[in-house]
Image (cartoon, rainbow, N blue to C red; front, top):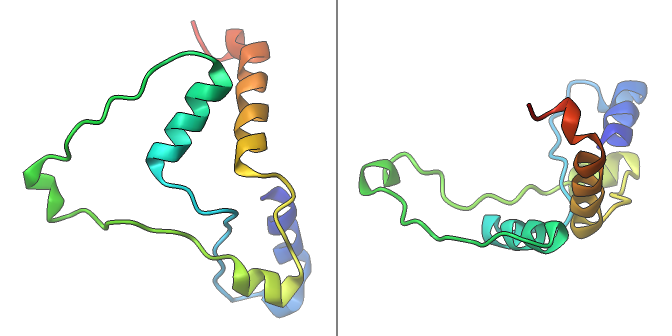
Length: 100
C-alpha cells in the first residue's frame, strides 16, 4: 500500500482522482480465520448483528483497485495471507512496545 501511495504522489496524471487500494476479496470471517491460523491459537465466535444496528449497516463492501492498476500499473505484491503472517510475526517480536 505504501508503494501505491508513493506512486500516486509522484504521478501527476493521478492527482485529483479517487482510488481504492485493495488486493484479494476477503470476508471479515475469512480474515479472522486466517489470523487464528497465523497466530496458532484462538477461536472464532459469531455474534449476531444487533437488530437496531442493521438499519445503519452498509452491508458487504469490497474495494476494487482496477482503476489504480489501469492508471498507474500498480499491483499488490503481498497476498492477504502473507501480509497477515508478516503482521503477526512483527507483533510477536515487538509486542512489548504495544502491550503493557
